[in-house]
Length: 121
Image (cartoon, rainbow, N blue to C red; front, top):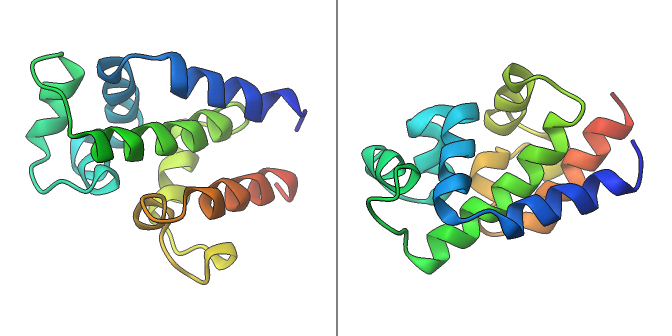
């Protein structure tokens, strides 16, 4: 993995508008997992964000952007099926917690776990 991958993933997550972020996450994870990552109960909200019909709460947007940063980093090397499995599986680098749930509270740890996964791939 080159040093430019984390920078590119970070830039993409920051520069995309929230509809693009929601759409990208929905494409990889579907509405249900994206809603879980975002911390919302209604998966249909994800589709509304992706279509630009609604804006998520600022905290929800932060979660989506943090998750997108990690997602884009992983997608540089792995196919979407592996990225999905990585996000919803127990992760030993996170104390056997699920990245999709941890990213909201500790995005740096999830990013570190993703880097470790790619380095040991």
